[in-house]
Length: 228
Ligand SMILES: *Cc1c(COP(=O)(O)O)cnc(C)c1O
Image (cartoon, rainbow, N blue to C red):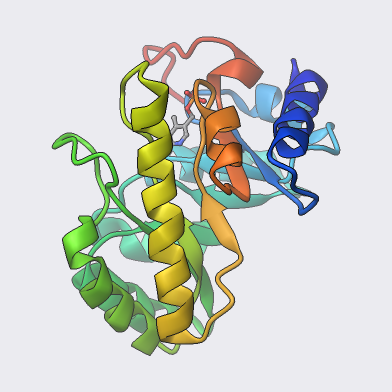
């Protein structure tokens, strides 16, 4: 497992960007076994687990036992799984509609907790990607900041599927700009800018990412037939 090498690449990209702030390292553990996750947890440079399916995370959390790491939901959340997600995850990074925000807020209230969340934005315009469109972002922001049981910590995006570096950087830069505007509008500090995966995390760091989500580079290629 390459955690330390990846961490070094993160530090090098940060240096190149002239930055000294902290960049969180999310180990994207979807499709991975509990044993693989336990091995990842041993690396102190890893800060979080990222899972994208509620059902899979439920099964794994039940057998995992105590974990040093918080678990983040990074995949699309369907309304009918909101309660389960609120019970299982420490943070939910994929808020994409006012309806989901309202529902999750109500559930968090019933559970007596405040859930840290990110708004997911579709910065590439690719139709198969989840996230709110940049056009509808402002309306969603207004809704999320009104929810007293949700704590908005920042934004998340998945970069475009292309090798064109300037196109990738443009998408990441647009998320950073949305976050800067949201900071001014909301008065919140919004410390989290979650962008960058195995293939594009260095570009994301150059554009200001404070949280990278790495799966393949850490654990190897995913095998989706290996159901957990
Ligand atoms: C799978 C996934 C990742 C990790 O992707 P890799 O290319 O394997 O690093 C990051 N973010 C999200 C939202 C994902 O679904």
